[in-house]
Structure formats: C-alpha cells, structure tokens
Image 1 (cartoon, rainbow, N blue to C red):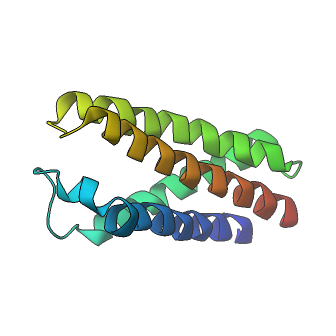
Image 2: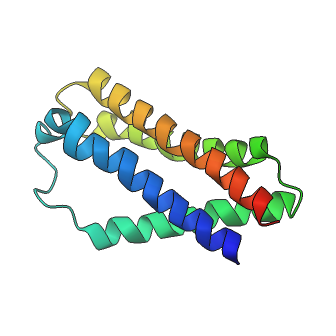
Length: 132
C-alpha cells in the first residue's frame, strides 16, 4: 500500500510543480490570453483528478508487473497515460476552443505533458522497485 500512496503523492507533487509552474508562471501570458478560463481555478476538482490519475497509473503498473518492476516499465506506463491524456489536451482542445494560437497551445501543452509524465514515470518506477 505504501508504494501506491507514495506514487499518488509523487504524481500530485510533480503535477502541481509542472502544471502549476506552467499555468501561473512560465506560460502565464498564454493562459491569460484564453478568454474561456476561470479567473480562479477550482482546486479541489484538480486535486481529485490528480488522485484518480495517480491511482490508475500506480495500479496499472502493479497489475502489469507486480513486484518485478523495472525503472523503464514505470516510465512506459506513465508515458503511455501521458500520451493518452496529452493527445487530447494538445490536439483536441485547440480544435474545439478558440485558442489565440493553435501552435502555441500545442507547444505549451505538449512540453508540459512530456515533463509531467516523463518525470513521474521515473519516480513511479523507482517507488515500485523500492517497495516491491
């Protein structure tokens, strides 16, 4: 149980750092230019999404590999889920919303998704290996 708890917490910390840093600092002008976003996000909903996503990824890795987890397998699971989620965020959202710049939207979302899920994959693999 400790590996799942630590994995979910790791996902939350990484997500808050990468996505929070992107939204509120690094790409603040990009997000400020979007006219369809809230001035103040509803953080409990975002936290609930992070918990659900973290549980799904740690459980998927455990079901797939059990105690025989290698670092690369943690990365593979996280990157697969990142590609699944990131493809929607990066490609489908600017196709349906009036984004000021589609190219900028794709770049911002793709880079942050790669950083978020790539970093998490490393920690997911290490946590599952350590607490096998």
